[in-house]
Amino acid sequence: MTEDTNDIQKEIEKLETKMLEVDFWADKNKAQGVLKELAELKAKKEGLGRYDKGNAILTIISGAGGDDAEDFGRMLFEMYLKYVNKKGWSINLIHENKNDHNGYRNISVEIVGKGAYGTLKNETGVHRLVRISPFDAKKLRHTSFILVEILPKFSKLEEKDIAIADSDLKIEFSRSSGPGGQNVNKRDTAVRIVHLPTNIAVHASNERSQEQNRESALSILRARIFKKATEEKKSIEDSMKLKNTEIEWGNQIRSYVLHPYKMVKDHRTGAETSKVDAVLDGELDIFIEAEKNL
Image (cartoon, rainbow, N blue to C red; front, side, top):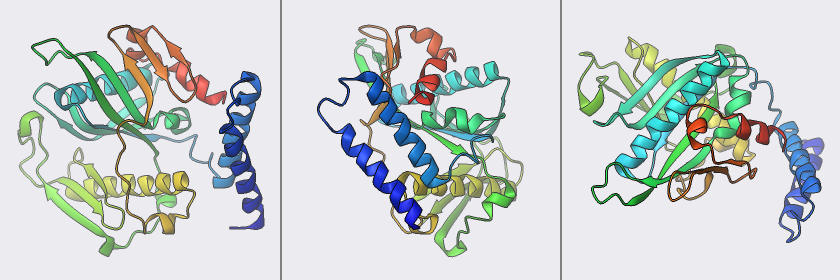
């Protein structure tokens, strides 16, 4: 770490300490200014921005909530798909694992569009749904959690910057399958790769060949290691040595409440709307713009 980045880190720590003060939000404009300065310092320190103009990889993983959580995964995927269509972008499927109700245990897609990663990167985090469960005969209210992950799509040249030893990888092959485990491909083309030092696992199953799925999975793995390193403010090499932390369901960044009232609220920016149906129909600008204004 150079002296310059040390200075930036000291400024970051100073602002983060200021945010912990009891009256931090007393002056909202001043607080927003601090948050904006903090974001700029972090971006400067990590040298981010060069990936913002490129494509993104969206992964949705269901958490606590069973059928409800997997149905929430479907709802969020459809929400992002509609947003992508509104932007004139497109989607390439990488891997999907559906249940018998068309819910998603997990799904990964590449979002192809100028500025896709820069636009959507702050969607990363735990999303929470509160509603009357359609799967509960007693019509009780349920809470479900989903992890949304937005990663940069690296070019072949950029991927060379993140070297991963073969000995650190556990690679498994299986048949691609549809809902309920129905095989849709008679050959073992689906790939699951586990990065042993961090326990990060990735899947790819939509390509025709084993090798293509392997390359696709490795691309996602490199992106996840990169994102982990930037979030932890560590070098890529150091980040690959550490065990991946467990997902903490409860640290939600956004809540979607359908009952007893209707509200979608982002817990980082405070942006909220009662137009839940519009949000689920892909109207995400209120939240994306609020992040930009921090």
